Length: 293
Image (cartoon, rainbow, N blue to C red; front, side, top):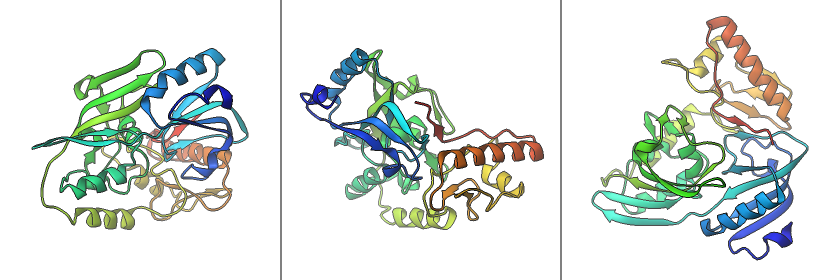
């Protein structure tokens, strides 16, 4: 397989790659092939090979909200890494960005140009592409607030550019499908003198959210309710299955204390959903994605 991809510029391949090495929760089996895409122009060539070989595939970002099972996982994980950054206009600032850039690096690059607005999202792990796909947000701000256009690639339709209005964005939701890879976006931001906002929001995150290996918030907040508060009131803080434990700082986080396994986390998620529903009649919905490949 490595030989097949050898002639494609901007593609790196690793075989039998342990996803636990790059997962933010430290869980995941060995994927048969990890395909790293450095340049979007290589995607059509990758498409041809995947279709010819009839391989299962999944698009991944930095694995900060995806939970993979263990064992040997057949197929391939395709990780898009292109992180170009270009300022198209100055007033208002319009930025063209590759979806492989991390959200934090994007915000720091904007700060260097005295461009602000995305600071509430500082510290959210993962890539811009992943953030757009789940409409990541914090402190009342979502990434979709700044989007103008999104460039997408799929094996079925190839490349296409969508206006923000053509996509359905909601709370921790977008209408992009699993088989659609976000490769870039155009953002419209603002230019203000707010250089200390990054420090303020990082402090808020550190005060609110726990440290340790996790996938961030496991569940979406139901209508006008806090998932973390519901889990806490259900008496589940510090509840554990194996080395997977509900954080005592924020109950919507599951922490891998040392050697938690996929089934530990999965069982803990089911227990939380069952207990919260039994006590409050609220069925929690996962914010993270549990991958079946």
